[in-house]
Length: 294
Image (cartoon, rainbow, N blue to C red; front, top):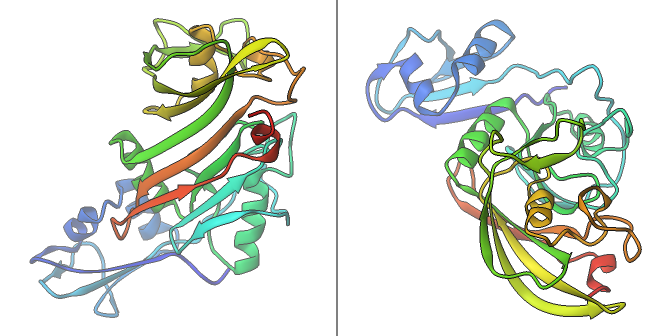
């Protein structure tokens, strides 16, 4: 590992270095890691501590410490469909049947395993920070931060509504355009399943019907969904709650007679870049097994 993440900026007014660093959104936790875990801060190419006073026009360079992957995450070489990459972000198009992170049932060959192997092959001193996670059987666009600091900024952006995701799904029945605002929590009898429950976390999903169809004498709907929150299984739980479970979703009322996974794909991802503040938009076509149903 010989490519630590580096951030550079120009000071806009006289202040303490600590204050200038904070204006860049660097958390106290990250600053502590920089101080004690091998990072460095330079002002005009001279290493300084955070009590140093900077003036307008000074160039501050922050070298973040090398990150260590968690013990359970093993780097692996595998195919990744990379849609976008720069020094801060990685956006991939995830296929179905690939976990985002390892689990007891699927301990390897996950997105995280392959991304860590990819990072190590590039010599990046970083571990994997998932920004927008997808269920194993859900396909589509997924965003990863290349550094703990970038992950912190992207998490804040999600809370502020600056990360927008749209999905397309095929559901049973004749769905309607609607906004579903119902709290979601863990089902008491399951460690996996979620449900709408009043003591759950706030969750908001917008539903737009694209078209109706019929397959094997069953009415179905092709819908577009916009997530305003990111709860576990949110779309699957909300659609089952309103009586339109996803085709192929056995966990929430569907069946696998037509397709062997939930018919759900993340088709669109729009975000504000955490460093440049540029708006980035990405799209992904429906995979063949979903397109063929239409």
